[in-house]
Every structure is written in structure tokens, then in C-alpha cells.
Length: 272
Ligand SMILES: [Zn+2]
Image (cartoon, rainbow, N blue to C red; front, side, top):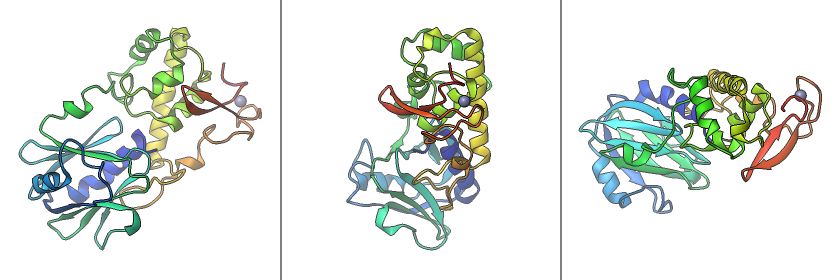
């Protein structure tokens, strides 16, 4: 569920709170056996303890916590993961899967209802994020780049937007919203898009992600920011989960179909 705007909101919130702090103690719950990837949880905790946090970065939906000594702690929240900084105890104790005490006595609490989230501690980030496509908000990602990428693919345009190896950070919410904004049918073959349509889509992706960032993300279900608060963008979506409700532009009922195995929302009149 957390996509680029949600992970970026968490990154921005956490930066002033945890950069320059040292991880005093790390604990991973035994009931989250898949949380730590690439090594046993106790080895991960041992290696993390005593490290100073130097910088927070993001690639797609991955949060990169760079540590002193060249190690990076990488977190992917998947469906229901949340990373909450707390000066008291950890919230949502029932779903607490890992806890990191910092040297100022505060805690970084990892909660995850469905336990699908993952963490790594690596010296080479490319082992985890090396195959991701370009960042959609980067200057280098222009309309030509998107058109070139779509022209090679016969899959539905929505499936290409969701492919993290094509573009990084877009999930189901923002793919549907960007395609509505651009007036493009989600099931249309990617390579059938004209240069002008690709240009509209590139602008739409940017607009939708920037607006969601302004709203501190979308909270349809579980997403909360680093203070445990919900985002606001769910109140501003135009098609996502609005099945049967009137399109804000033309009044036609929003339709729901499956595209590339994912539930997809669109306006049959505005999107061609
Ligand atoms: Zn419409």
C-alpha cells in the first residue's frame, strides 16, 4: 500500500528525528520470521546496534537508512508496514514486529499487520534496489524517457506503470489516478500510446505524485506517517475505489475492471 508519496513522507518526517542518532539496541519479534532478509534476525540486530544513522534516502518504495561505516539499512513496508518514531513506548503493540532504541531514549517502532514487510542490512545497496527503473519525479525522467519505455511493451499501460523495473515507486492508487489525469484507458497497450499521450501521462504522473506528497500520502487502510498520523490524499482521489460513483468531470459512473491482475478504476468516457 505505501507508494512513493507515503515512503517519501516517512523519509522527510524521520530525517530530523533520527539522523545523527545511534541505534542503541535492536529487537525483531520472533513472530516475524520473514522481516529480516539475507541473514538471521539476531545477526541483523547485532550488526545494527552501535551504528550511527547518517542519512535517509529513498528509491522507489524502498527507504534507505545510511549508516556510519558504509552499511545501509533498507526497509520495504509492502502492504501494511509502518515505521513510527516515538518518544514514549511503541504504539500498536499487537502488530509491533521490531523495535529500535536510539541513543536519545526514543524508539523507532516497526508495526505490520500482515507481516509482509522486509528489511536488509547491506554494504552494497544495488543488491536490493539495483534493478529499479527511474524515479518518476527526477529531472531526468521526461516525456521522451516515458515514451521510449512504453514503446517497447505490449502489456497494458497500467501494468507497465506498476512494473518497478520500468518506473520505480508507483503502485495501484497512483497508477489509476495518473491514467485518469492523462485521459488514458488503463488496459490500452503501452506501445499503442502516441508521443503526445505519453507526454500527458508523464505530466500526470508528476502532478498526481506531487499532490499526494502535499497531502502527506493516502490512508485507505493502514498507512500512517512517522508520527502515526494518517495522510489526507484519499479525500482527493478522482477514481481509485470510487466504483459506481460519478466522475467529477463528466458524471459517468466510475468502472472497476481487472488489469494485469490488479483491481483498476477508470472513467469510461474521459479515458480513451
Ligand atoms: Zn469522466
